[in-house]
Amino acid sequence: MKGSKFGVYLPEDLLKELEECMKSIGIYSKSKVVQEALRLFIAEHRWRTRGYVAGVIGVLYNHDADHVDEELTDIQHKFLDVIISALHIHLDRERCMLIIAVRGDTERIKELMNEIASVKGVLLTRPLLLEAHQ
Image 1 (cartoon, one colour):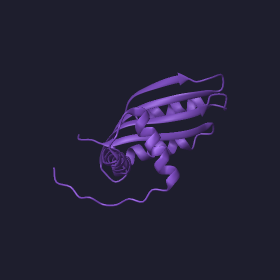
Image 2 (cartoon, rainbow, N blue to C red):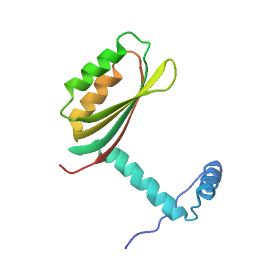
Image 3 (tube, rainbow, N blue to C red):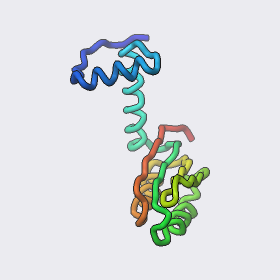
Image 4 (cartoon, rainbow, N blue to C red):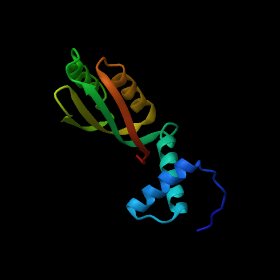
């Protein structure tokens, strides 16, 4: 495979942390780590501009907040065209995690994430979406 070499500056503390992490998981090629990091970076940002994606949206919320469960359920019903499945996990007495599997148009999935993020009691929404084919 053809490629290109280039230099990268890393602060000393970041380099040390990288080397410790590489050693702990048994990877010895910095080039391989940089390639994987770049692939993840590109995949994480490419979905924002592409038409069709698939993946999951992680939602952390306080289930004691007024009507949060009902609102999240209503939103899911509104987006059945892009939601494949959902998994509800009880983390502790106050917090729950909702993992929503999605597939569809980027703009529609952005709408879903915005609606979820606007619900009172939602603490965090985090997408893991990748470019997909219809």
